[in-house]
Image (cartoon, rainbow over all chains, first blue to last red; front, side):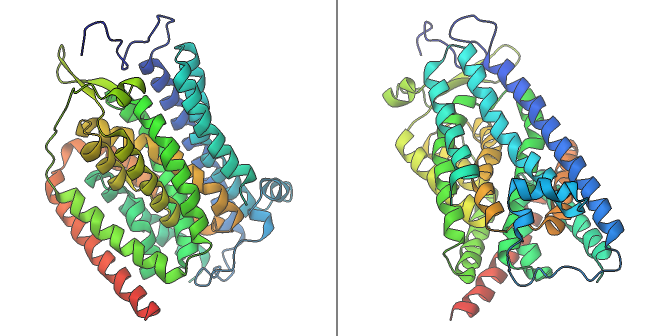
Length: 139
Length: 278
C-alpha cells in the first residue's frame, strides 16, 4: 500500500477526534452494560417465577404450541409487567438483550458520521433498517 | 420434575456449555440445541429460541474484551452484516415452513462441520493485492504484530465472502446459532483476512446477525421465557468465566475433547432425524 493511503484502523480519514478505536471502545462498553442489565432483569424475573411456581408442574416444552400473545409482542410484555407476571419480566430482559446489537449499529452510524465516512454511514443505515424491519414489520 | 429443579439443572448444564464453548472458541450456542433436544426432550423450536438469545448474550458480553485487543475490523464487519442479516431473515422465515426433522438434520451436519473446522490448522495467507472493489469499500486495515510493528492487509474475493456470509446468516436464522464457523471461513479462507481479524470480527457480527432473527422468533412464539431464562443466564456466565480462564488452559486438548462431544451430538441428531423422515 502507498504511504499516502489513509489507515482504516486506529486513525480517521479527517482528524475530528473520532477514531475507529474510540467508536469500538464506546460500543464495547454499551454492549457490556446492555447485556448485564438484560441478565439482571432476566434473573429477577426468574427468581420471582420460581418463588411463585415452586409447586406447579413444569411447563411442557416437548410439544411446540407457541407462546401466548402476552409473550410475543412488546405491548403484551409491558401489560404483563403491570400485572406482576414474572414471565413478562423475563421477556423484558430478553427484549433489552435483543436491543443491544441494534443499539450497537445505531452507535456505529453516529461514529462513522463524526469520522465523515459517508459510505459507512450508508452501510450501517442499511443494516439498521434490515434489523428494524425484522423487529417491527416482518410478518 | 418441578420448575426449580429443572431450572437449576438447565443453568448448570448451560454454564458448562458456555464454558466449553468459550475455551474451545466454538461458542456455547452450538451445543445448546442438541443438549435441549436430545437430553431434555425439548421441541426444536423452543430450543433454537433459547439458543438464539444465549448467542446474543455471549456475543455482546465478549465484545468489550475483543475491542481491547484491537484486532476486529468494524468496516469489514458492518459491510458483511448486510449479507448476514438478510440471510438471517430468510433462515428465520424457513423455520416456520420447513419440517422439524429437516431442521434437526441440517443441525447435525453443521455440528460435524464445526468440529472439522475447529481442528484444522490455520495458516495466514495475507495478501496486499490492490483488489479494486475491496479498496473502494475500504475493506482493509493493519494488524498489530508487535509493540512497534504492524501488518497491512486488504480483503480479497469480496463477492465470494459476501455470498458465504449470506449462507452463514441463513444457517444462523434457521438453527438459532451464531454460525461463527462459517463466518470465519468466509473471512479467513475466501477474503484472506488474518485469522485474528476474522475470529474477532466474526464475534462482533454474531450478535447483530442473531438480532435479525429475533423478531420473527418472538412473534412465532419460539422464545419461551421460563426455558430461555436458565439457558441464557447459564451460557452467559459460562462464557464470561471461560474468557477469563482462556490464557491458563491448554486449548488444543480442550478443542479435541469438545470436538468429540460435538461429533457425537451431530451423529445422534442426524440419526434420530433421519429416522423421523424415513
